[in-house]
Length: 482
Image (cartoon, rainbow, N blue to C red):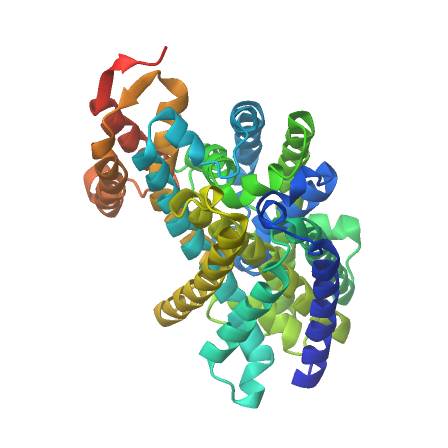
């Protein structure tokens, strides 16, 4: 596909997003930006959250992961639903009870201002790095598909990419994102399904023979019971249960969408449906990955060195019909922006409310501050993307889950201590309680094989949270809550 056609397709797509932004952003104020006036339909929120969660990483990185990890990712996906049940029944009632805009304000009510700001800053560090990693993946593909043909350097591709996000979110915020994310989810799932259809047609496979071919291939292995492996079933399942608790339940980005729903019961219904969707959605992308590698082998195509380049190389390299190239670009763009737009909005929300306390400002000053913060995070994400480019990592999904283990672990410890005990804490030691655990976890992770004969995986999240909990226990006050 030539660059001009690609530009036209993406321009039309963004035209639709800007129309949605114009409609939802009319008469928007800070309440609209932060909470969408609490009138979002739960089913629209649920559809959009799927897109925000799977993002460009699932769209590209999960299919590429199949070659080295087979279908073992499903072990972790199986644990996801348990995490969503905990969110629906413990965390959502808590947030609705306290009527929060930022979920980290609960920590101030429970412990104090230092805990509140520590929780917010942990989220800001996590979300900035995670959203930058997701957008970096997509910016690289768009750079190859368009910018390189016009000799545009990568940093300019990044600036254009992130600026487009800012343009359609700066006014309506979460009120706009609830609807744009739903559209983007439908697009990216359709792109994956139709790509599978075209590949299977090229290989003369019907639905039943697709299932048989994948099952009999080298890529279909799900369960791993080698305890020394980082992909052992128990490790993956437990990590899968805890990851949604922190990356959804303790994440302002994902919870902010839930909080736009007026009633708790409907928000819980959204969480159940959203959680149940993960198994079929990830099975779809893993099946796509298996078929991509089977197609490469059958056609004698040389596979790219980087796993994340496999799907883009086939979709944009002329190996598949033009319709697949068009849908790939639309799906990829939708996947990228469905996670980045909400991340940018939630970062703006958290920094504005948790750090700058815009809820205590006049409406005029609060709006100006929010706009300035929004611009600031747009620039920061662009800078972090360029750092990822310099590091040149192979699999972005691995980076994201590893980063989550280190950055969300202290949040898991903070909220667990707040919910499971009635103790207060000596707040002056909270910075120590959230900084030390990732450092200790890193040392243990680095030496795990030489010390214990095992390779640690994403269960570092649990270890990190447990160390944080232990330190909070050591700094607890003898006076308990009434």
